[in-house]
Length: 148
Image (tube, rainbow, N blue to C red):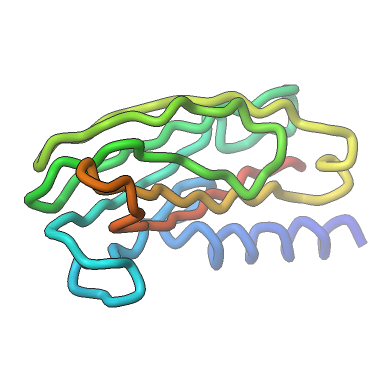
């Protein structure tokens, strides 16, 4: 039974991570001409990685976020949201066109988390217009951490 649990966990890691164990795939970029986003000349991308990628013997995981402004406009009040509740919150930040930022946040693994073979964290990064504060672009990525 334990081997089946581990096999299913590894399978899920490969599906959700896109690249391999505990690595994220580059999130999809919603371009500025998408009418559901609001339209400007800005686009954003986000990558998320965990350290360690195998957390079977540790009590906390550090998530590293690489955020890129791929557009031609400055982005203000960029926010990072995690699907895991309890990840240390990050302060909103700004990026000029072509800039990138690397941020980190810690997550304490709970006993409830340990009931599963892996931990999933879906992340979104949203950039806002510096002129009116409206959300102009969003990107998503995911990260899986092996727990057993």
